[in-house]
Image 1 (cartoon, helix red, strand yellow):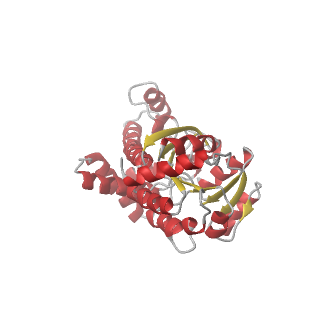
Image 2 (cartoon, one colour):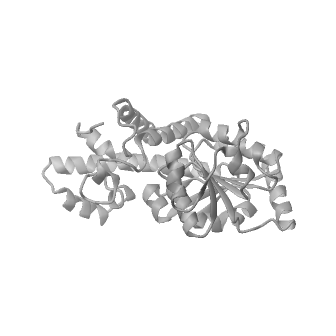
Image 3 (cartoon, rainbow, N blue to C red):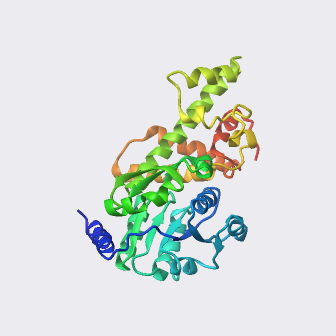
Length: 321
């Protein structure tokens, strides 16, 4: 058992003994983008009192209109919340928000529960956790799977890294935003699970797009091919739920000019994390590496802001910025 894990568990146990296990009536939420905005609104629907912050004032106003209270800074959120949830884009955003001057950790009251649902390198979660423990705070990494649709419909899966006690205490809160919360192990293991899942998702979306494009160019009706795939051995989420061809499933980004959803830029970022981890551990991931190059090429062609299912049109030479 690591020193970090031991200290984190001691804080969790002492919190229980002091009667600090609670329903988190005052929740802070930082990062109100495509995912975070819906997650915050679902907490409001479940009766949680929210104080929210984002660098984008329009994002704050959007959630305030649903019943939240807007904050002027990270420090204001941290000082006035029993639990703080973050949903941020990159490693550097998480590190700065938590460990920077007047950030979440330095401003929080002892015993505050911190939940980072961003997708970052596991080492980032472990770094933040060490600082949180030093200040007498509780921390878990809880990245999510399910995309914007899952965030909107509260059907996300949370992959949790942290002590068993902290996982148990956070479960009802997480399930207010999703349908499932899974304990993956110690700090950082939620990020490992998310990183591996996203690598597979990125690979499968390319594979589905290649198969559908080939079938189409050979003269097979895409709807017919889709029906066959979805009831055969090629069945997968990328085809059945998040189809990359416009017009097949009306509610997904491909039917809305590939707007919203899981951006090419973020997929490329996640694949970069996977490739860096694979290099550190000596793990061969040839398809993960090839996929990373594909999405990086899409970014270079001005598609970073489009949903990652635009890979279908990119393969066909039809993608538009």
